[in-house]
Image (cartoon, rainbow, N blue to C red; front, side, top):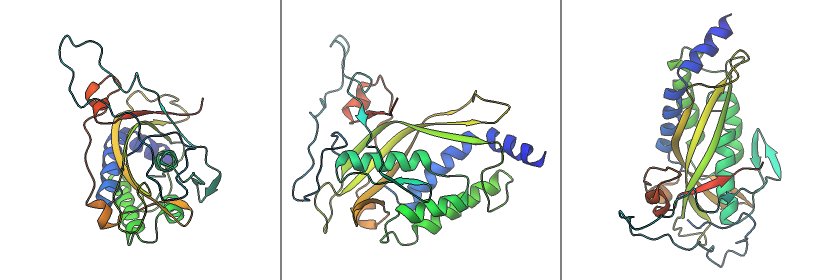
Length: 260
């Protein structure tokens, strides 16, 4: 019964938690350009990744006809991971599509209400150069748990299932003094989050259209999350994402294609 009450409590505060968690990761320093298919390699490191045809920078005007939107554009395919490490997918290719896929998979798999599992996930994919990042994120999760009357440390309440789905991304490469162009990528994500219990198989009030951003860099043969100041200083903010928005298209938002 106590677990049921905690699950209901966590469910009722899910929307507020989603906002807090997104803010926590952004505040911790995770931070994203070119959109290509996931298998287009940049493994040589001496060529910049290809970019798509640049959307028009002109805002649509009344009577100008049908404007381009993310809904009308080709969706971004995700690379299939080749491995798993401590509950998070790994093994994405050294390409712009691989960087996007690494960010999306991490965000969808992140155990944002379970500090113990989250630490394992973060330690598997955070760059060793991201000093203090893991501890900062675990501290944020524990604050959130306390805010919904859960023990400071522990797992997701029994019976509560939380599902995160990234709907769209907005990406850009960041400049690096030490790495080739395209090896540090800033990925903004628009996502939905749902919570269900055995007695409630659907979520009547899910989080819809929330946003978060991550920075990933190619290091030791894998995409790693980082919060290094030299990249954090290059972080930019997108316009709001909406699938039928010409303004979102102009700002390079593209929808994500999940496997059927």
